[in-house]
Length: 85
Image (tube, rainbow, N blue to C red; front, side, top):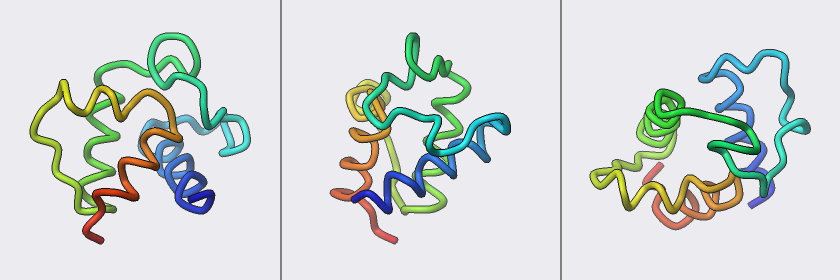
């Protein structure tokens, strides 16, 4: 699980152009949106693309996805349970 968390952090840094950050800068349990990392809806779309491309996860229901996008940890748990790659 820790390896997956680090991979997700690195993929998010690259996809969201967070060049000034390192995986260590991202709190695993901090909120991704609003306070915490401060991502927006465009960033959410980028994360969905990461899930589809890297892990074979297709999200069809945006409101369902919202609960999995709370933090890097909840995202990693979702990936671990649903990945096809």
